[in-house]
Amino acid sequence: MKQKAVSMLLIAALAAGMLTGCGNEASSGGEGTKTPDSGAKQETNESPATDKDAETGESDMQGDGTDLSQLTFGQDNWKIDMSYDYSGPQFKRFDGMEFTRVVDTMGTDLPEGMTIDDNDRVWDFQLKTGLTPKTIWSASGEAYSQKLNAAIASGEIPDLLRVDLNQYYALVKADLVADLTDEILNGDHPGIQDLYAMGDNAALKAVTVNGRIYGLPQAYMSFDNAPIIWIRQDWMEQLNLEEPKTYADLEKIALAFMEADFDGNGQADTYGFPILERYSTSTGGDGSPCDLFLNVGKAAPGIWQRQEDGTVIYGSLMDGAKEALTMLNDWYEKGIIPSDFATWDDETLKQTIGEGKAGILLSPWWGGLTTLATNVTLDPNARWSAYMLPREEGEEIRSAAGNPALSVHVVRKGFEDPSVFVYAYDMLSGGYKADPASGYTNSLKANNTYSPMQGCSSPSVLTSPMKDALDKIFVTHEIKTQEELEAFVQQETDGLMKGDGAQFTMMIEYGLAMDEMVEEGQNLRDIAIGDLDAPTTYTWYLAGRIGIRAIAYAQPAPVSTVFQGTTDGMNNYGTFLADFEKEAYTKMIMGDTDGQSISDYFDAFVEKYLEQGGAEITQEVQDLIGK
Image 1 (cartoon, rainbow, N blue to C red):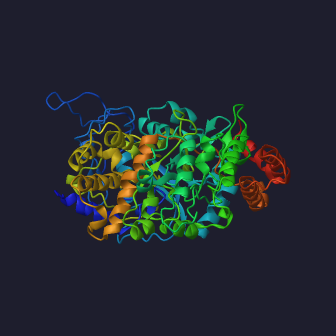
Image 2: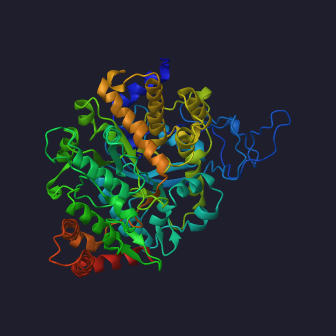
Image 3: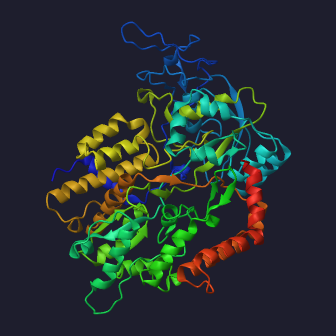
């Protein structure tokens, strides 16, 4: 088989460790560049001119006459790569403008010769924006948190501040931060506007207070923990079963698996649809039926949702949950759901799958690397397929998308021009590029915590250009080989090879390489590549090809929370209410409802939940984010 060097590098990289999301900021390489040194030209606050050179069609000049090609950044005098077109109105620099900030230095020793405001992360930021940070104080870990909360309480905050959602709501309530609504939604910022739109603007919705936006959320939405439905493909083929298109089809497959006696022991000991007591849409994960709730009744357990009148509701109390609970109870009564599922944990589920006692598994796309691994290793005949299903054929598929924002960047109210940070955030996603010929390297040495603003990759595996790649591979089949994918990646490098996009791209490349092996008649279980032993090769194929393909085919609508903070009521009643909710849901699935119908029992549960602190919490959330 034709095996390219890039494939071996890819495999080595994948074998080195599990994928990490954009929350792992310390290891993020970014698109590096360095900060203007003292000789850099300053005060370049206009959009680049559109007058082009008569011969090249390019212009090096800003609207105020500054020669961009002469700006230099950092110790190595990095330059802007002038082979790109910077004529769009979003390309607005602010050379010479300073702003204050604070920095958490925990666990982030700087390379020799670098300081908090003089390091390659800062140089990178300054090349893209022209802005110069001035740190007014720094601290480490808990000391930083305490000092930051004290600063917020006193109203003494820097010009730019990165906060969590609780701190964000406190700052908004205290009227300490600038209103960025019009600039974010209507300004010349296509990069971040497109990025937020990719996640159905869920990140913006999470920071919307009474219809206004007071910060730039660090988008994080993805389907990383969405519980895909994995099914034993070899079992379906043995029973001549068709692929499922709805949950009704899934029920038929589960019943068929239970009756088939695949292990030949003459006992009805195959489980149909094992689940765990994990109902929350905020976490998903192995064994969680949360997507079933989203598609059967459209309730969203564990997260906050907006109702048609603009008020908020805790998703576990949504009336539609009755439909999903009724379906799960029916499956429980039929023996499809294990009678003792409430006692199961991750190890129970993994052992059950590993021993071939179940042919259906709820697990994220990366479940092929984890929960399915034991089964694949022990059973050389085991082959798995993956699906995301609607309730009825043709209906929209909804799926758990996770929390939409990691953090929020806010601007001090009274700062001379808050829009500069919206321009800056846009430039992080697709602005000025560093010229590699000037010594720039993609591997920045300073930890990402020193970057004045924390960027992130696109908020979904289904976003463009990631979505374009998936469509071309799985839907239109325009990309069939590694060479074709590499050509596409080269064309779309700026968006596709950053953060999670790079990781998913590697997984897809790996899948394409495996497809070539399969087409040549090779058994993936017999192939050891790099550090991957033979069975492990197939688990990578399951994750990178089968799992991601299921998401690409389904094109699910992301469902996430509209409130990520913590209220006083949550601190007071949260643990009790979480246990109360889990117990009630489990009892309804098991039919332990004191003789009541599931509908009546659910109504009583909602009433008690609200009486025991839920109503107070709901009002707190409503007051914080408004209508």
